[in-house]
Length: 122
Image 1 (cartoon, rainbow, N blue to C red):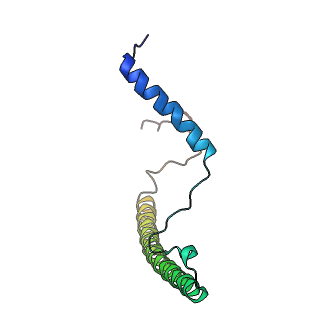
Image 2: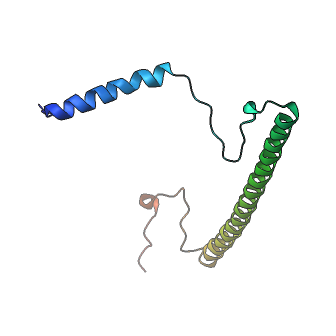
């Protein structure tokens, strides 16, 4: 049995147990997005509209930037896939050449080693 010192138990247990109701009871707070202004505090309609338009422009720029980054990564991945396909094709051609070069040495896949008959001595 593990014994926890009294002071540690007195500090840890209430802290852990006290955190659960706060997580369950309180509603989720609004997520802060860096670059977005809180337009709800503006009292004048034109300032609130300008604030919202600024937020929309910022989000459109962010989406365009992220889209460009994703397209760049996609193009890099497509180039890597093409290079790997070419590499596999070259390796397959090499395997085919090696298999064609020594047709007598290659055993059929269906033939078992016990089925082969030894050559008769002359």
